[in-house]
Image (cartoon, rainbow, N blue to C red):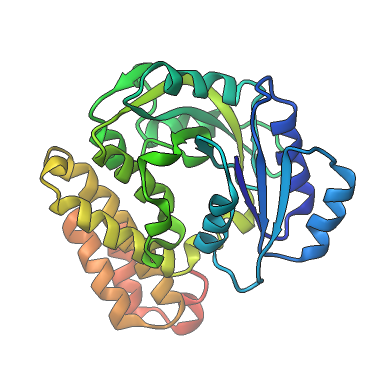
Length: 303
């Protein structure tokens, strides 16, 4: 189990303890920290378990490199990822590992998750909206093969999944993937021709908080997603899901356009907002285009 972390020691402790409290005991936890080293050093003194290994990375190490550092030191047959601001249900691994053991051609097993506020309280209305948005509401429990539709709809949450380590050459992940390595992983696993198993239960508590959205305000995330989804659109096996991909691409262009407006790059922002409008018209893209021409700089900074 891989647990990349950055300056969230209190929530990291919760995340680790949720894994240790689970009913599946045959695992290792690789904590890779690219934040303040004193955080993990202090936690290592408090949370003592031989199954945990603590890695320290340079603070300049990015999200993808931090993930790969943990991966390179892991030794398990299967890989699971948990973010430092989330926590697992006790049966997370005991529910998702057996489907991979039952079928040799199964490369991925995943489930749904709860959405919580920053204090860990479940928001059921937001949880249900999130499940509908990403195509998990009504999704049949069992094996799906092929599962390109799941990749197109971005239905697989990386932190509520287990996948075969040898199914992909993960060390070959391009730097351009950046924060979108979860999209790349699902697409890459679908390309193997193997099966994905969906377990119809919510097995993770995903925390919403202001820091969670800081990455979306940067340009790297949506730019990586745009490049990746454009590549998926070129794949003949994904043609049946072109409509879904274009809708997701429109959202990525909208996010990129908003990030550029905040930087004052009006012309570059318009290019993304026009693309968003062409792929899937929305009032937000239209409003963004209007703002790119009319809004004063002080207003753009608050978008």
